[in-house]
Length: 560
Image 1 (tube, rainbow, N blue to C red):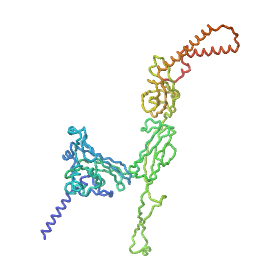
Image 2: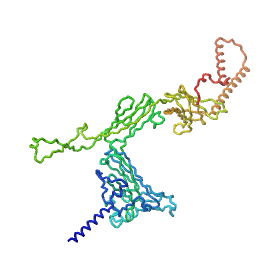
Image 3: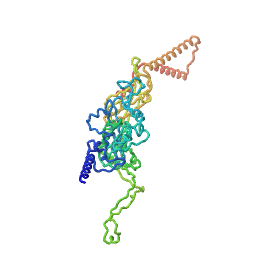
Image 4: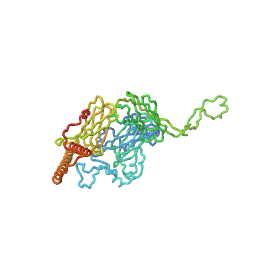
């Protein structure tokens, strides 16, 4: 009897040793992090204390030389991305993407192939495809249940079978995720995505680890590992962007007085957890204008004073949730009450109750906060083109057409001017010219620009200073310098021709008409004086005696 007991003791000891030596998910997936001993269960996840099938899924430490031969012609890398931070109760998503060695890619059937015209040793025929791993052909030859002679090959590391759904032949990678003391398994192609609900995850930063295995002939081969930090928070993640029409640099937090600033609030909610929530925005602009509460995520405000201001925003979300029973602890009864109570009564009572809300349901409140400092200064508020004048030039100077633009502005004085000449649609830029300017008194200046060819142009003139800029646009039709001179010559020729024709007609009339002296009346004298004045005006047009410009233009502003 003692021999039997001794033998049984050795068997129990051997079993204990094997159990202690058995590898667990925590050992494979911990990635150097400490084990989580207390946690709430995540839906669809399992404890990392389960056993790992090391025979079917080998585990290699980092630096193991077997990593060099786990993939043909190079090493596969994995990129793990997350859409965190996540509001507690919402879903946080993860995307894993595999990067194959040069010239390799995954085809539509899930096999890994070499890209055409990329390999150093191209195939003999251009129609022949060279495979890195032709898993599809191998799987089709053996089917679902007998790929390795038994059913054990289509299972996860914990022994659970793969899900059998359409397209399973294209999923030749096994992804095992680990976080918060639990793991999740799935199959996929070279990229996969999954989400986990954060209701049972504690607030703060957590590590998500993934190990990727590829299909092999008798077992699965590790190809890559990756990890990423994700954040769970009870504050609504928000981002505020600010826009002002004439602000030159929106990122410097310096804005212009007397010009509205548009504030746009973006709530980071990729899982649409807040879709059915009532959301309000409470603004304090810091300029003494009071609190402003809005239901829209976009609002505007105009600062009428210069200075530094502190902007505060509070976002409130009222989230509808299922009502849960509320456990109330009853006060200790007196001796008189106890005598009336049943003998098996308990000192605590569970009561189901519904919170008394206006909408008749239950909800929770979540808040998000934003605070920043901004500066408000004087700036350029408006630019106007008040005059466009074509400059008349001599024929020798008529290579380019010159146009003067008289521009005014409101607000602060500009320090630079830029002119953009575009096609008539204002879409295709043809030339850009920028110049520094010095204005000390009034914002009034003349900008002279040259146009190489005649045509219709869109002109944009921008005046700016260190913090602001404003724009004015106009369409202008430009005639070529040489064409204008030709047109003037044609008109002069026609005028001279008309004068010579009139003189010839007068000579013929004098030769063939008998002279009859007539007495000229006073009215006729007036008509003759009018005719003389008319011909004097005609002569002044076609035969100008002076090219001197109007002296009144001497007060014209400086030309840029």
